[in-house]
Image (cartoon, rainbow, N blue to C red; front, side):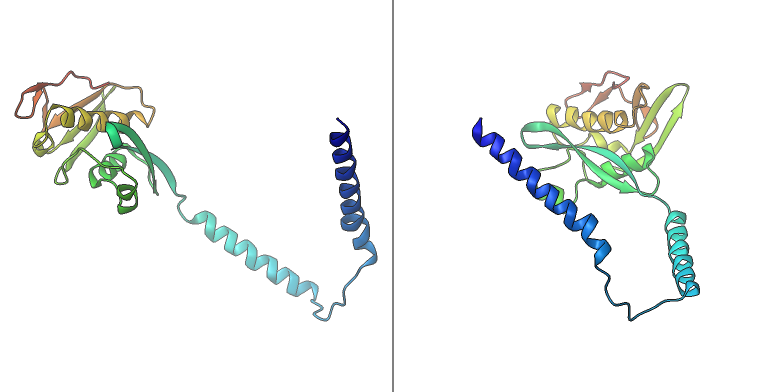
Amino acid sequence: MGVFIRTVIVCLIICAGYYVYVFLGKESYQPLDTNKTTVSQKTDKYEKLNQIKKEETQQPQMQKMKICFMSDENTVHYVERQTQNATLENAIEELLKGPTKYETARGVYSEIPNDVKLMWVKDENGKIIVNLTRNFEYGGGTKSIQNRIKQIKLTVDSFNTKKPVYLYLDGKQVEYMGGEGIYIEQPLN
């Protein structure tokens, strides 16, 4: 207990000394001002700063969106992407691009084949429809297809839509996928 009290006292002395130095010591110290500026020069400086601030606020603000990939041992791994327009369509497009080299180097991967394209995303009648090209179902086994669907579902869910998500391939609602004929329960969530 004695060490604690000594430590508190030393801290208080240091804080008091700092206070005296910073707040009371400044009043007695005034450096030579060899660069005297006029009021108009200061006004010009503030006008320039205000102009820069105005230009920065006019630029579109970057928004974050979460994209769902997979990582070691088939676990879900979210990454954040920056965009000027965080829409569900942009999120699916980013998902289909796959992880960056940086993300891949850290063990992040996608089960979705590289050549899959987004045909459209619709939010209609209280449900979200994601329409992809048919090659979404090709390659890989049951676990791979389940992880692809999980990536789509969780990326859509990251927008907190709480709407049912339906998967379409080439404009038709999916019932079975892959060479093994895996039954796909719709909605995905």
